[in-house]
Image (cartoon, rainbow over all chains, first blue to last red; front, side, top):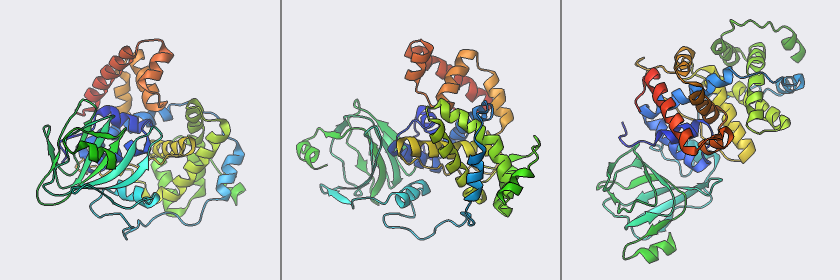
Length: 214
Length: 183
């Protein structure tokens, strides 16, 4: 059970359809592995559904229904895919694997310095970008701040900073006021789903080089 | 074939939407499908028009929503969500797809089947909404259902952003208390 959760505003924005696709992906992936946030989002979705049920009716043309009936396919979707597609992993939340299937990454994994690798995924309409990031076990991400909001969901391994240790399913939010030097736990590579609004700004000794290559 | 399906419809309010989905899933029952369309499509249309879609685009989104409902009916699980919730979620994603060309994830929900928590009942949600005053209700309605941001609501209602935020906070607090979820 995760111990770091998204703010409930993010859960509501997800329900109301206000998030960009990159942020929606990371929140939905957390919800999938977090029973507590599932319960909350279920409530928010039922509120929206209740409003829908109480809505006025605006008639739809009969031709819409007829057109639909004439093109209903014979086959219904029933069997989930089992074989993993390129870049999918069995430990990823299904939400992420579904996204990877619908939108195969345009680029392959990129090495960033000696400790980091990243796989860029999608951009949101508001400039948010989403990527899968790997930090080698025991390695440190140099000290940095954030130009805009950053959301991190840990998928494997652990990542620590002054706020605590994040493990699988934990979600954390950082903004421009947070300066940190996250360290991956020993044992296995820490894999995260990361959404950034604006780039990281490295502040340590090697910062300038990393700002240039990341 | 279509004509027969359409003409044999009898609309009974007792029709249980979850059973209708089951009929679509198990028997590819077009009559059940038509009843679902007739109950939800006009509501979806009101919602889409409020959200700024043109009538044509609204109808396209409705068609895509019901096509997905037909195809995914076997995946619907009444223990995880009500039919209205399921339809709302499909339609919301189709709307985002259409209006913003963005892909919204489907929520994968695996709520523990211990029966301790089943918030997705109309009764609970209605009871919860009753405790809100008019101003709080408006904020929740516009935020959750019309998809408006607090900023947009503040502008419409002619009040400060802070006022909207505190109304939303109080409303959520009340909803959480009635629906028994932690903050």
